[in-house]
Figure 1: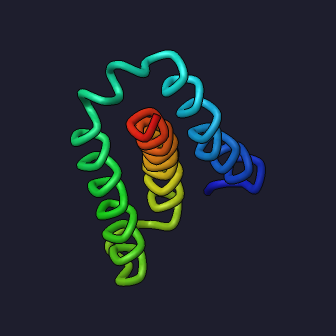
Figure 2 (figure 1 turned 45 degrees about the vertical axis):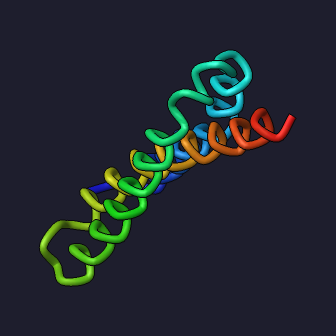
Length: 94
């Protein structure tokens, strides 16, 4: 059984994708331009997995505990790639 503390920690870890994405984007400007298409693919894949995860939970194919874990992991990756894409878009405009 997942406790409230575990859920809170998962949410915190998931949303750490925002500052970590900004740090990565700040330190890897040249790689962002080259890898932009891969960031788009990764963010789309993460969204697809998040939707599929919620869909599977709604039909009781996977448990709530598994849903929380998958949701936290892929929310982290989604936020990380979105932050990097934002930074790459700003770098391309300049």
